[in-house]
Length: 106
Image (cartoon, rainbow, N blue to C red; front, side):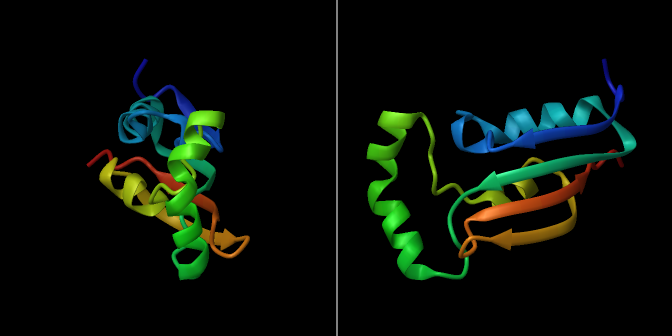
């Protein structure tokens, strides 16, 4: 049902969704207008080019073995899904992301 939840949480799921934008749009749909969408994810580093190059080189093999595409552009995906990013932090050389978002219900 639309606008059902105060908070929606996803942890380390974006990497395994075939269409993460549609999953995030669904989270937005069920989140109340003043609710939060909390994301703890991993993806490509925006700050360490060498690490990003490694992730890119090995992404296909890693995905085949583990079902995880570890070099996705997390912030780009979140923005394309229409979420509003309120808080953004990274760790682990920029590959672990913590985002507090809210749905764009305007």
